[in-house]
View (tube, rainbow, N blue to C red):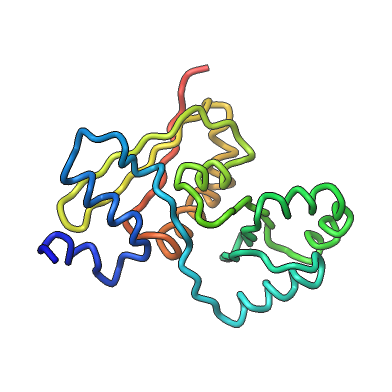
Length: 192
């Protein structure tokens, strides 16, 4: 194993697919087949008792477990397969309403078919706004920092950021803690 490959396996890196993609992007900077946004990823699951309670509570209402759950002081994200999410929105819409009323936090049901491409994950996290396109930039030497830029109309910025920027901060916390701490998502506006 070469020196640069050894650095990719450091403890702060939670997703090896992203690390291997970065390694190949370094070797062949002009290759478009190793697009970082097309990398298939998987969340690292580390659950506390609170996570387990949320999983069980979700199962009580919908009779299946979500693939992944993430929460903070403002939001609870349930990541569920897209087919099950459609089922909740159609057949179990009354249960969904009752489930949402049980929480003081904002509940988000996110489509998540594991493994998911990184660009699809970002689009699913922001399914409430139209995204024109995504781009990314890799900076730094070790560790490499990955900036993902999401472009939307200026009129949707407030919905993408959330109240006082809490939604985008929550998304970045999610990416840092459960995916890879080198990734940060930025939102840019384009003219209408």
